[in-house]
Length: 83
Image 1 (cartoon, rainbow, N blue to C red):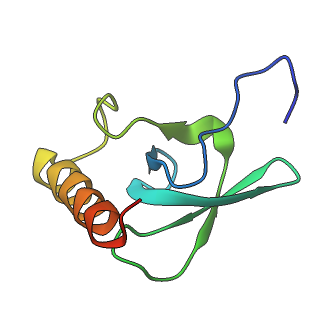
Image 2: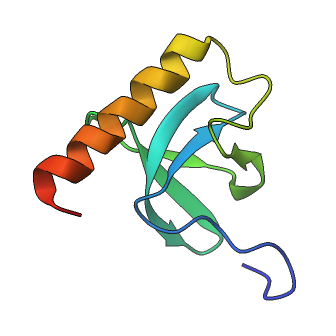
């Protein structure tokens, strides 16, 4: 990433990928790319870091129930593993 531009979200952060219209947890950053995985696990996908938003502030992030479900799943995961 360009040191003058916005910093990418930290690994482990829940984000909304506006391009893919889905939420995921940041797994890694490599050569200006960001890799996300669904909150409950599953196949990673590559996301454009410029399309990543906070899931609660993303106006177009879809159904509020999906956002809430993702946040609860992340909280449960963090609680279970003691992160």
